[in-house]
Length: 332
Image 1 (tube, one colour):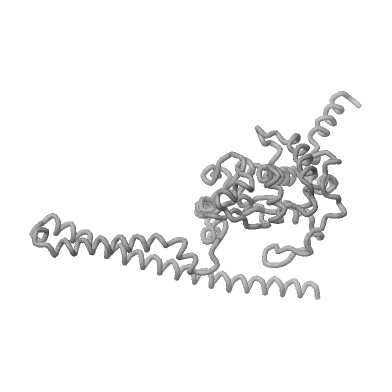
Image 2 (cartoon, rainbow, N blue to C red):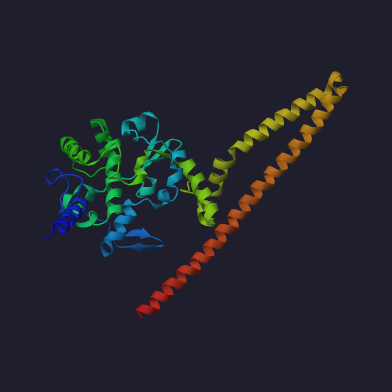
C-alpha cells in the first residue's frame, strides 16, 4: 500500500462517525428499546420497523426550523436553554410534544419539550442506526445536548422523571457519568458536532409563526401562511380571542374618546371654539371609519378562513379516496 493510499484511509477513518459516549456509559441496552407500533405520517399510519431510517428522521430532524434558520436570531438567543427548575420558576407549564421542531419552543406560559428517546442512550443503537448518516447523527447529538441544558441538577433530574421526559429506571449518578462522557465529545464553544438548530436554545413561538408566514409569502405556500409554524387554535373563537383581543381595547378607547368629545361639545365655552369643533368632527369621522373597516376586515378574514378550510378539506378527502382507491386496485 502506497503512502497516499494509507493517508486516504486514515482520513476516512478519522471522519467516520461514532457514538458520542463510550460503550460502558450507555444507560439503555438494545433489547430494552421499544419503538411505537405505528406513528402518524402524512394522513395515515406508518410502522417504524418497516422504515427505521424514515422514522428516525421524523423523530430527530427539524426541517421547519431549517427552512427559516437564517432568521432564527429573531426568535431566540444563541445561548443554552434554561434548566427545568428555572422553567418552572418563570411560571411556565411544561407540555410534551413528540415533534422535534417544537422542542424547547415557548408560548406565553407554556414550553414544549420532546421526551428523550430511550434509543439515544444505547451505544449499540448509535452504531447500527445513527452513525451511518451525518445529518441524523448531528440531530441526535443536538437533542442530547438539549437535555444537558435541561437536566443540570438533581432537582432537574427528578422533575424530568416526574414529567416522563427521560426513560424510567435511570439513576442520578449514572446520568451524570453519561453526560460527562457525552460532553467530552461535544465542543461546547463551536457546537460543530450538533445540528445547527441547537445553536439556539429557547425559541419564541409567536416569532416562529411570523417568520414561517414571511417565508411562505416568498415561496407562495398558502398552507404555511395560514397555519404558521405551529397552530395553537382549534376553533375560530380561540383564533379571534388571541389575534383580535386588542381590538376590544381600541373600541373601549374610542368610546371613551367620543364620550369626552360629546361632553366637551355640551359646554358653552367649547361650543364656540372652532378648533375644537374641527377636531371633534375629524376624530368622529376617523373613529367611525376605523371601527367600520376593522369590523369588515375581521368579517372578511373569518369568511376567508372558513372557505379555505372547507375547500382544502374537500380536496383532501378527494385526494385520500383516490389514493386509497389506487392502492386497492394495485393490491387486487
